[in-house]
Image 1 (cartoon, one colour):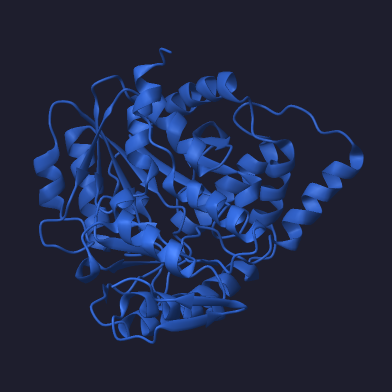
Image 2: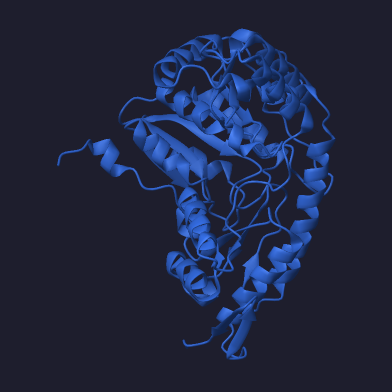
Length: 405
């Protein structure tokens, strides 16, 4: 059968596939440790649940404006002023079915076939596929200094006449690295100078550690007119542990917001009104849950680093935020997909291959789970990779036997 060229070019989401794999293995009773997950285990804020329940109790669950209900727009406006120091209008805000949709419709609104989109390596797995869905060309840029911190000169050298946009994700998924204030200032200046869209994927910007503070890209922008090409993407999924509500947003210039709204109106209409009301509750309500989650993740990071540093041959850069460690397992093989499958098959530990993020030989390990899961997961990985480990390992009521070299 004949299918579209774009459709055939899109790869399966590695992270969502792992979630499905985890569920299937657990349903079979296998003792799975999921170190590949990308969602916090804390519960959604009570204010979010209360708001959603109040709407449900009325039975009036209806369509909404394609770009979001007024109450949610006002909450996002207040959020932008509080955390970015920037005043925006309702006409600058669009709410979507998750930050992913907000980013996708933004790309659809600004890209033509053959346009190029630049983003640093390592990158979130969906960036290349989103560009391809628009008929555009993804341009991953590997830092020349071998670190996880993008180098402005490397990005500038990658700009061509076809470059349309740059995507920056800080703190970064998968590395957890938070880009410096100097880099943010420089990339804002570069994109304004080159007349490029700069898309700031800020979904983790409040989940940062060691006393660091979120960086506002707006304070470095010289052009805050309605001709600005600065785009800020955010949502409730990560900081409020509301992944299943699928509610995100974009703050953009008025003309871009209108085009994005037109696209979204034909794709999905407005986001679920239940999710929007929940987001209003989260944004306007008690914020202590965000800090509680941040502290939990900071402690989990400490445990993960201790465990990884005890594993000979593994190198890891200390994350500044998010809930991931991006560990270098090259000492055990350059093929990260093969290694991830080996760990899944032999010790029921799920990780995400680094090749999905643009760097083979690495594994992304999540700190979303409990400390017990982190310790147990790394213990199993260590047993699987250490040739001098005992021949048997007991996992719950399973006996694992080393039948490989």
